[in-house]
Amino acid sequence: MIRVDALSRYPVKGFTPERRESLVIQPDGRVPGDRSLVFRFADALEPADATYPKSRGLALMTFPTLARIDLAFDDEAQTLRLRVDDIDVTADLSEEGRARLSEAVTAYLLTTSDARLLEADGILPLGLLGDGRTARFQDRPQGYISLHGAASVEAVDAAVTAPVDDRRFRSNIVVSGAEAWTELEWTGRLRIGEVLFEVQKPIERCAAITANPDTGVRDARLLRVLTSEFGQAEATLGILLLPVEGGGTIRVGDEVTLVPPA
Image 1: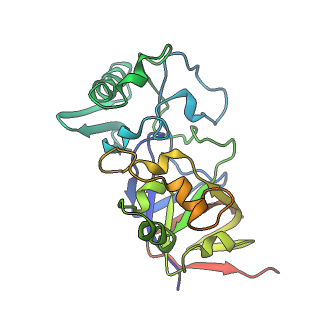
Image 2: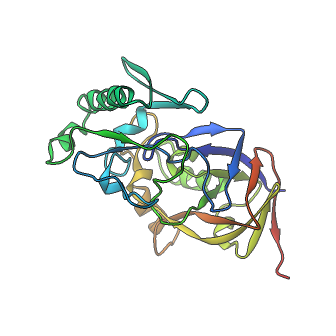
Image 3: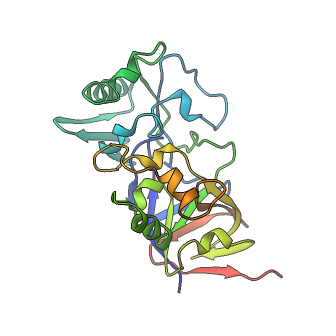
């Protein structure tokens, strides 16, 4: 039996996951509070739509040391807490609070191997965009829910010496009970708890997966491993889903059922 093993949302685009016992899936395929904030570069304008390319703000793909920052967002208080090394800052989303959070992230990055990246024109000062509620800073114009199988990640972990776990792949849903790579073969519709989804496409991966989530160091050439060790034409792990017939709530432990075509 295939079940939901873990659920995550990502309050700040490009930063660490926040584990959840349940996720509300909106009819548009977005999760409230997921990628609802982003640390933008100084020369990046406020986006007119719901997309925000990684190149316009902080992201693991370019700044792997972001992986070390422990992040927690309080929905009720609308406060964000950032902790790493001797930095521990909690602030609201007022203008003053956003400035404090941006300064804290900058101070940390200046102590890391990514510091040189901040020297480029148009990077500093960072700014914090978003309202903490509206999911609007995804890479794609349409909201998608991401899913991968725990067994697929275990297969990758067995192929390299560096530790590899689910955090590297930044999915909203991790399922157990399916054989490695099985999810890449799913087509049509599947039901998770009370929500019916349609499978959209596999997820082609970027350099973000090479960053160790504990050390912030690029310690595994996982893009090459996926193509060379597993025979993929493009480095792929996981699938994208969209809800049909409206959204709903999914929970850890929910059964995942493939729906046969009518």
